Length: 440
Image (cartoon, rainbow, N blue to C red; front, side, top):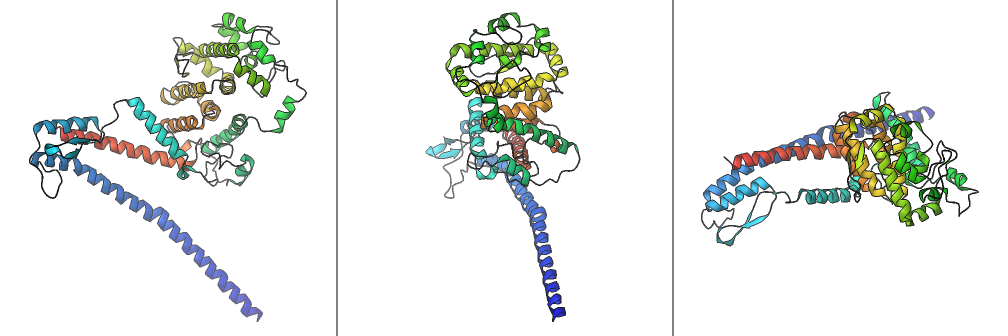
């Protein structure tokens, strides 16, 4: 009986393994063979349809056929053909009246205002990013539990728990190294974006009197910085353009840009909740913070060109200052502090323009190579506005040369962006061909 029982269990185990192998084989066939083949056929069908569509429209315009089964009302007039050609150059679909008052479709035309069209596209993308298709499972190879960029408020998890269950299947390559650095940085930026939800913050704030506001008093000009003994107005008047002091003195940055976390200057004080609230209500303090921001921008070869939006551009001395910034990498820490401070003390809308500037300089213009990693690991994730942060990451991904080494976004979303980018490129080529055919 024992032999028979063991042989029966062995048979069951064998059949179970066979079923598992069958499921794996079917899954492989569907995912890696059938689905790509169907997608390829669908794309070819659409391509052939679009390829012959301009020729069909052109023949219809010559014969006057409007597409009605009962017959048209006669050939189109030359003026109408010119209207169709002009609409084809502009590109967005809209309706126009044909002969006999019939409604005819014009080729697709873009919006007259490119900025408005861009805003509409961004709004549509923002809505899509909140949809279910953008939800990322923690099994994604580039999933980071400390990055809530792709999560809604309802789906955010405990970062510690989600990081522990993420499978570790990296190879020892450049991507693995970059992702480990990103994950370490993401822990710090998550702490900042979620208002320091840790026990360390409680220890920072203990035994501090509620009416003790050293940072606010400094920004109102009532108290000098320590240990240097310099007042805020002296910084703005005497240190502007004094690049030697700004580079080699390290005790001032915590006074100019205070945070709710400690730094290297033990004579500087961290911000308290009460101090932040008072700072946000004080126009003088906020105006002085803006001057401090312009002081440091000039030090980095940047100038603020729009105080309403926070847009920045290169200053006239950008080449020399970029060289210093690229060689003195401790300034990367300073810029991270500046971005955090802007978000904390009333200028969160200034964050994205500055980060976009650095992304463009590093990824598009090829400047500041030793700043690029800090831009991607820290600067981008200091932006509090989640929608702006998503747009910045997408811009970085599309401009990044080695996309196989891009680790600052889940792989699932990278694939979605790549597919849409390829689709838009194909549509652009087809639109150009449409115009060429219509002009023949």
